Length: 485
Ligand code: NAD
Image (cartoon, rainbow, N blue to C red; front, side, top):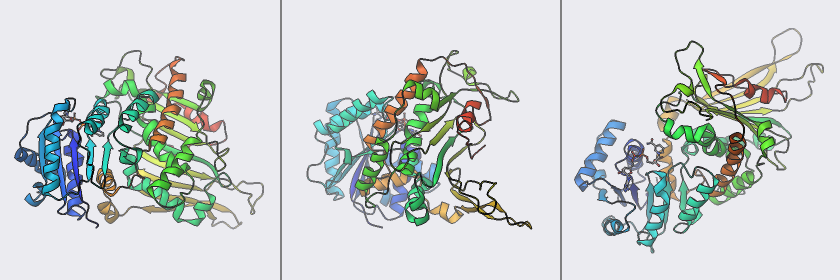
């Protein structure tokens, strides 16, 4: 591996995410030889901790979440400074420690700032990093890693983006969407662009429709405070689903570089049709779960902290349309929801039927390429083969691949990959502002159409694949969801 030289400052260093994901990821990068000598990890938060106490905290988090003892040689690269991130004066000691660590570990002024704090702080931190002089002027890079959510609608997202852009340019901002760090999401590009058969047929000539499903079995649990204001639309469609769609809908990038990948994805996002209220009614379905069939699970309205008259969506299904040469007339059906029949994230690419040479009265069935992202990586390809009957007929067979235990053991966790890619200056698996902005405009249009019409809830039984209207959305067009739960 290529050794990386950088300082990483973690804001929110005593938080849940830092302990569960960030320190274990840094430790893996160390074990794999990406971090060797020239790295420094600076933790900061509101808590009062000594350097030693912080190192013990990092040690314990690696012990707890990886069951390993991190050596002193690793821990000595960690230092800590308390700071209130809203207080400008508190940035001076941070700056001093950054400079000290820079010199001690010979970090060449390369700096990454990771905001693992509540979203309301993102803009403030970016502004103060610049105004208080924490960005290096002589290094190779200053980069910002930013957690979700990125705004709660287009307006708030744009405001946040403006705040960031005072201090960081777009190519310095790494907006985390951990779905983009998943192995099988990254596999979309390999399948699309690594196989001439798919590369050449990835368009309206050959593809009938594309389906993306992100289904959960859990209900709202104890997150109603946040979830009731977000719903499935903002919690799952605006970010993860749209980012997956970006990889599916883009044209071939001119070259396999960060810059060209962003350009190609952005062109696709820019051709997404934003709906009028009438088009929302036609193309989008919302749902809210009721109790399960045997009455052992309560409906959404009876969950803790959910207002009795909540109009919140716990299920969304919809049709996306791209006004582009490649996708004219090809629907992208997306759906997500809580309390569905199974927990899975998957993509089904449904190819067009062709003339049946063997029996012109019988249409062939659709070939389907399926990419299963969660719970485990799988690829399936349903094609026609000869039936073993006396007459010459075809039948569908499915070619299957599944990630091996060895594959799984070697696959980095999304957080490890995202930290590595940021260190390496590769932003292709992060959410670009342009795509985020289009996704918010799209989602805002859907939400505002829904806000103006009352809907009777609940409208689906927990443990099913959502309301009947979701199936009807496809049936109207003589199609069906490939995945039935
Ligand atoms: P947390 O509440 O566990 O930790 C928050 C951290 O911020 C603490 O270290 C706290 O000391 C610090 N902090 C709070 N106010 C501060 C202030 N005024 N000055 C300085 N430090 C302050 O939060 P978390 O769960 O670790 O989440 C952090 C971010 O990551 C959030 O944006 C969250 O949305 C995102 N996120 C978290 C998870 C997760 O699994 N926890 C998953 C995905 C995204």
